[in-house]
Length: 293
Image (cartoon, rainbow, N blue to C red; front, side, top):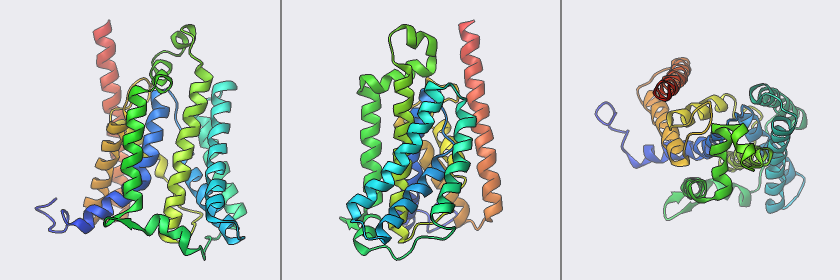
């Protein structure tokens, strides 16, 4: 790409790539943890929009910035809690549950915002998404901090590592005394929290809360996680690998833009990439099974 476009390696373009990553890579961090425990969350895009709109509406009625952000994060956490309870306690299928939540939350966003973007947000809130430290925008700094902390915790925390056992063999995990329901609920809350946090960053960055933001993001996030080494069958994956997968998707999208490829072709490329990622995952699982036999 550096040969085909002189702008690819410029700081401005690199900054644009990482600003895009600051949203999707944050959610991918949570998504890979859910995938590791054998789950799936298709509602992250709608959760992102809900947190942004909830924060924006709170700011518009005069609630202080800190409390408005907490309201946005709480709305996202509630989505994750409901997903976790329905899947871990009630026993519903993760795909169907989160697909239904995707539509329900998106509908809720349209209702509370009356189908319109939330505008006129205060400058002290917008600085979160637009401010800089040492010439680097805050969302980029937050991205690296959260990825670093997330990868460290997943590798070293006893509780978080239980997700690998749950995703690898849920029955064996229960027999070994692991609270499977608690692990799943915490993981769904975590991915929803990160989706909500990303929604607040997007809202602050653009100075408005859109009711359509985040549509289709769940597929890109899942693709990034799988490319980064996670498995749809659970038990595998790392936060750092998921970050690299998100970076690959971000560079791919940026490269297509620089080459002037139309948005419809970009969607086609993303879809094909997802299929190839799932195919490679299936081939990898088949090889492992064959070795065991």
